[in-house]
Length: 200
Length: 234
Image (cartoon, rainbow over all chains, first blue to last red; front, side, top):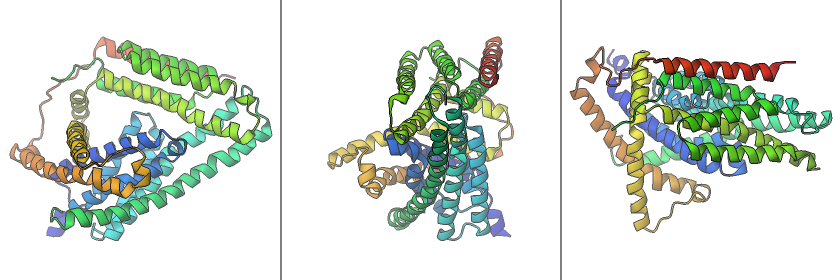
């Protein structure tokens, strides 16, 4: 009975999540901003940032092993998307974090392997959902400007086929790799710097 | 002293979402240009001249590039350029609206708005803490930068690519370590103040919609509606 009661998030946990969410957002914006200065970094912005944000997630779940931690952290992390008015992207990302949260909750936040899996699922679905509206609209953008750009039908077809969906799925696949690497490295760093120091 | 809110944060958020969502659909050159001009005008009204002109400048360069893109004979290169220009053009409007939001309102008013709309604690508390924690992280980062400089460790953007794990250890671990302590102290302080047991909290920054808020909200809606008509008319 006690273990079920302890799994519920209390006010102090919300404060801890808030602090880690702030760090997560800072890492996201700083790394995302630096990556955005380059050509590849603009397109692969989310896959790059999730590698670095992993440490905030892994340390948080090492400290607050309760249901809802991943979900709240994920939601706060994608909320700035509203500033960019990416409503569909934010909703899809939240749905992704709900699925990830279910995975962690089923395991009762016990296993580190599940933390890694949850993070990978959350980040991958976030990457897929968040960038989807941009890619969908991208093709329409070119169709609307076909005349101005003097594009032939063949060139347009090549573009839609080659540069939109393959790039989208490529970025989602890259997110799986970077989030997995980020989570694994972070688990090691948490063990090296925090667990051995006895702070989590 | 916190700055005053020029617009009600609810209206400011509505405008930002409206414009940001609208920007995604404005694919015709003329509607996209007007949209960017309107966003720049909104920034000028809040005296954010620098951001407004820089954004307009970048947008102008990209528009010019797009107008001459047909001169590039390599189809793949041209399409890649168009694709990147597309992302940048959309992101500039979003960036301008984000900047507009930070100029017309401030964090205490956003927090008040969240309390007023009765956002659930699970979301409101972490968000409130996160918003107020940014200046602390900034201060911590400044101290960290000084200590790294003393140890002759440079933090350049390139280091994130060359030594990503080392950068995590140098930059994020110390900040996270300090944040762990801060979170414990903040939680203890909040518990002592009876944070968990207050049902109805007092709003330090009371919100009331004024005529100006309604006016700006309606005008923005009409502008976006007109641009949608221009975009989708046959």
